[in-house]
Image (cartoon, rainbow, N blue to C red):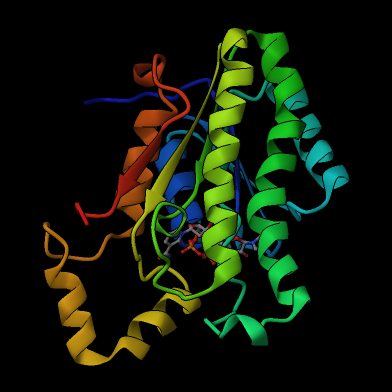
Length: 251
Ligand SMILES: NC(=O)c1ccc[n+]([C@@H]2O[C@H](COP(=O)([O-])OP(=O)(O)OC[C@H]3O[C@@H](n4cnc5c(N)ncnc54)[C@H](O)[C@@H]3O)[C@@H](O)[C@H]2O)c1
């Protein structure tokens, strides 16, 4: 299956490393101009040569004004934003605790970036997509939003479930404008310090049990997640909307 994004403009949030980085390179290597944004700076000299272009910007997805500026700059450059991929999220350094010990700020920190961030990012690009007559919005949710989270973090499981609800609702609202809205739900990927710590904390025996519970007998990699995203934001997926695709080796 060959997918070509030549001439397309994409915004990726949470693009500095891990899954967002893999999605950025996947889009750019297929010809897209990618506005790769993150709250932390990424070194553009680390970016490999691609068929397209990677433009790095520091943007906080909890800040509506910063997202509006990003969308305006991207569409001034090429006339429109065709694709938005919301990756910014994660557990923000937290670990599972009994509910009675969770501070309200911890709850909010995870909700802000995962759920409000996806909402505000979509809000920033939708007017342009409507004017252009179509677009693709893709949210990286999680298996934690479909079942019980391995992290044990209440806010994470519920914010990820919230993202899946947001995707369903936006698909319904934006379908008449030719805008598809879908989500990819990864299983555990050792793509960031938090998921690496989670993996190490399991110890040998539980790690082995986890891998053996996965029909494809391995953990996913950032590129596995990016590959699913490439399909869902391509023309080939023009009749798919409101869906959440689990990319988890079958577990
Ligand atoms: N790694 C996993 O096991 C796994 C599993 C399921 C879902 N996910 C989801 O995949 C996404 C990417 O995860 P990852 O593993 O690549 O982790 P990651 O921590 O590398 O990715 C999250 C990115 O979001 C950025 N970010 C954080 N707050 C932000 C903000 N306010 N504004 C903009 N950017 C911000 C971070 O700097 C980071 O680059 C997350 O949404 C995560 O919840 C990850």
